Length: 236
Image (cartoon, rainbow, N blue to C red; front, side):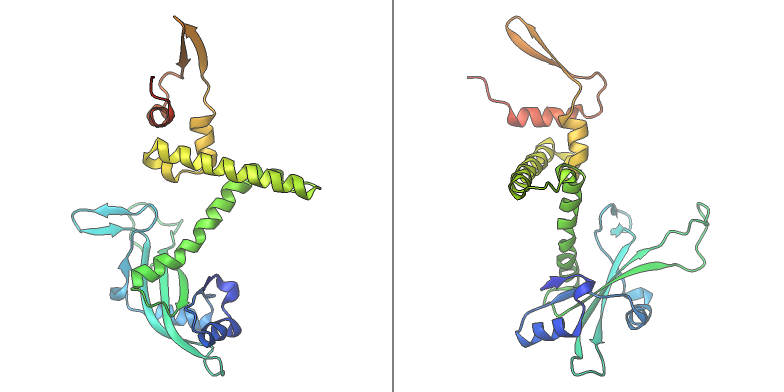
């Protein structure tokens, strides 16, 4: 059972334990959780491959603002629902807007994200699996920024039809991104539509052949070429 902080409650965790269900729940960063995070030594944190992380060949590690660690934590202590399990903490460095480039920080400040879990997997695996729940939020954001911006209608059947079309369009657009390859596999659907699908081009007929005239010095030509090569029908 994987959930966000709204489900970090005695009844939820107790129910999971009673039915022998593994749980992974985001915790609120309250006073007790923050104290547990602050008590962890700096030498215990490990870097993880996080979005926009960079691999450093010299140091043989990921250069990233994200680090993770785990400790043992007893939730709801002093109640009949108290549970002792793993507390996995991810921290991300806060940028100091007053610090000039090259200036060292006096005290490093971090944002903490804590997960209370009894997962049997390793630290890196358990943290990554819990973080996967945020993937659906990106899909929701893509849909809301596109076709679902026009919902709701006053008619249920119209909404149902529109939602079906939105799902088909989203899957096709994601397919376009994967066929375009490179960074397009993870690009927002809005970006894919703007830069690859909605192309200012001109069709011309010459010698019984259709020619597609694309913009000159177009920065996304390689992506379009990859897509065109993947989907066009072979001669004959």
